[in-house]
Length: 205
Image (cartoon, rainbow, N blue to C red):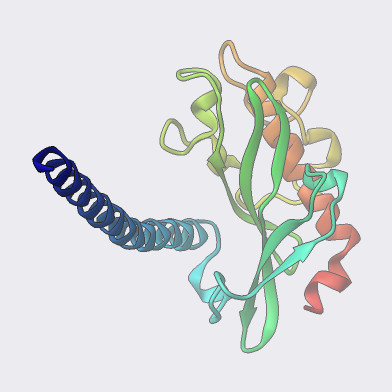
C-alpha cells in the first residue's frame, strides 16, 4: 500500500512537472516568436531603407505588397512578393523579392528596387549558401560589389553589358568565383526586363 502511494505521489509530481514545463515552453515560444518576428521586420525595413531612397516613398513598404505570378525572369516557379513604394498615393517604385537561380551553391534570395523610370536604386542578396571567401562576396557584409547595380538600367549598361567581364560584360567577377556573380547579374537584368515588360501593370497597383 505504501509502495502504491509512493508511486502515485511520484506520478502526480511528474505530471505537475510536465504541465509546468509545457507551460513554460509555450510562454517562452510566444515571447521569442514575437521577438524573432520583430527582428526580421526590423532587418527588412533596414534593407528597404538601404536600397530605396527615403524621399521616394511615404507609405509602409512592409504592408503595401502584392504577389506576382511565377515567371522565369523572376527566378521562381512560385509567385514572388513585391513591395510597392508610393509617394502621395502614386507608385514611385517596386521592390522585388527576386531569386537568382544557379549560384555556385544554389539559389540566392535577393531584393531588387526599381524606380518608376526603370532604374535600379539598389539591390541586396539577403540569403545564400555561397562559399566563404569566394562567392559570398555578393553579400554587402563581405564586399561592396553588390553596390555596383545602383543607378543601372536596361540602357545603362546596354543589354550586352549585362554580364560579368569574363563574358564580355561590364560587371566584375570575383577571383576564383564567376558562377555566383554571373547569377546575380543575370537576376538583376531579368528583373529589369520583367519591370519593363509589365511596367503599366506594376505602376497601376
